[in-house]
Length: 337
Ligand code: DGY
Image (cartoon, rainbow, N blue to C red; front, side):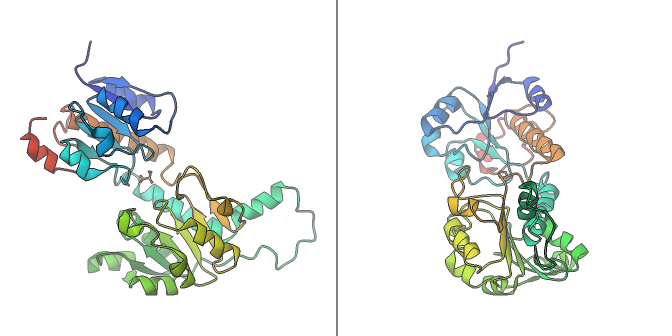
């Protein structure tokens, strides 16, 4: 049966998720993830009613220009700094993201990076695999820094930051956090977390996890100055976004022993990674996979598909996408979806 609306999916997705879309709309898929130019994106979007996109697809006024057909963009991710929300709203295009479903998995991964960086897991494994464990290892080789009992700093205390904090209870840590707005007392109590200003966060953290959204104000929120205020024994973990940390300044601090280690899942200009970081043994690096468990990536993809169908007027939430970022557009449409 021919379908009246079309949705473009900018990267390969789980077949069952595509099938759920295909019940209602004509689905246009891609065989692989590709970095597209604004012109290419403009062309793709001009031919469809909705698009499911990811972090590498920058949707701004330029790519929307002159497009009278597009009605919805569903982002595959909780972070949506790739979407120019005011431009989408001005164009009357609904925009959605994928919150909640990835909170716990992403918090788990912050801990994976923290433990790996503090205890030198990746570097030790590389050494072993290179056949260098031949006996004669000294008792004081491979010394890392402890995690349990230390002070954990969390910069950005939204849902994921809070989930990171709750896990620290099991490690008997003191948790301090900095966030634009202080959490309600009941939440602070439950997370056993104490609000501090940014300067105190930097100075007191034995381990600092970054979970803040990326925007113009947060560009290089951790730069040379901030790094200079951290303990030389500290470990820095970034699961938030590239650009929040000045990667060149971080590499210099790690190389010069002004910071013990870093666990990084996100980078400025990813997928390229600063060459100085790639050379450092005290940096644990991963390719933006904090949400990548089988269950969670499926749930994110399904939520993006559900958002899209609802935005185009189909399914149980027709007209009311579960994670809508610009409800003003619905008002403007007068409930027409
Ligand atoms: C998110 O959901 O924001 C992840 O970082 C993937 O982009």
